[in-house]
Image (cartoon, rainbow, N blue to C red; front, top):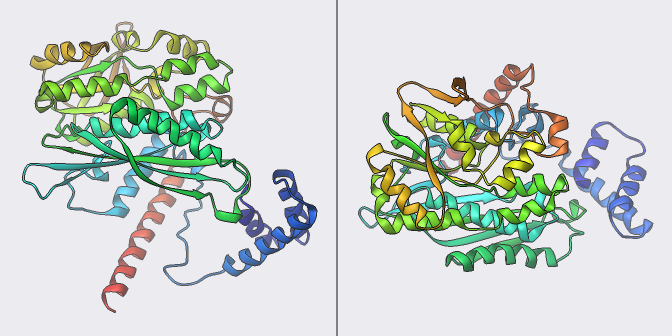
Length: 440
């Protein structure tokens, strides 16, 4: 619970009972005495008052009037992708080889050594795995390493950032780090540094945990999405999912499915590809995560300026059967959730060599589509070619997500306009602050 946010809302509404209400809310969440809860409430109100009205570029927040949930940010659909495009605009043009404008899995800069690249990525833990720290650590570490591998690079190190709310058990930290380092020991890629903090310091009570894992890699070859070419074939490895599938299994009380996600097959497949030298013939690689294959297809099409055509029958064969049965029994579209499979785009003449190499790691792989001239994506289902664009949100995979739904809000265009305006305001603020600092 964010007691600072509660206090500020009460102050804005001029609530005469704010202190009593906040004291009561604190007692509901925190194991403490009524006297301590009241002192905490009073202190929170004092601090909230001090920061309720501020002035100056560096202090005044940019406001769009659109909430994260309303616009689907983080829900791996159209609203989320649109926001990421705006993030790239706020960052602006960089000297990087691959940056946020490419919507790729990682960023890339040139090393001082000629012909060598440094690859950097960061992944946040799945928000619904707060009560399962080991699982959260395992899956986010695996995700970070995947994002480096799919750039055609070999990861060399990981770093972590973990935040636990004030009432969280300290052992959550150890459990989470154990999950990360399980992947580190299995892959031989060490966790070497990190940060450990409370969420919001004293102003957030409860047991919620959040954080992320970053990874760094090096390479002399790149497999960025922008290299996708007309005539390429699309290959996909088997996938059993990670954080998303685990979350679906946990919150639908199908806990036995979680075990299917505990593997490093993706990493092993990538290692085989790197060892074989085939990476120099591969145009692009990605992991099937953001909004499932629907989301990945949209991002690749936009970045490379091509059209992707998929064969649903071939894709279905590569989904772990236990996971697929769960998804279908729950009426969750497997094409719109993270499967943690490896997607490879390469010239047709090297497809057989790639498949042979990946299968030597004990990982199944098949050709699931092709790249054509045009834009967007299509999918062949039962002999019929259908549109294959992402929905407003990824497939609803928990009871709460099903309640919220996947439909695009009727006022989406109005929200887009507000988001556009906020991004421009943030850019303007950045420019003014830079000019101010440079003029000193």
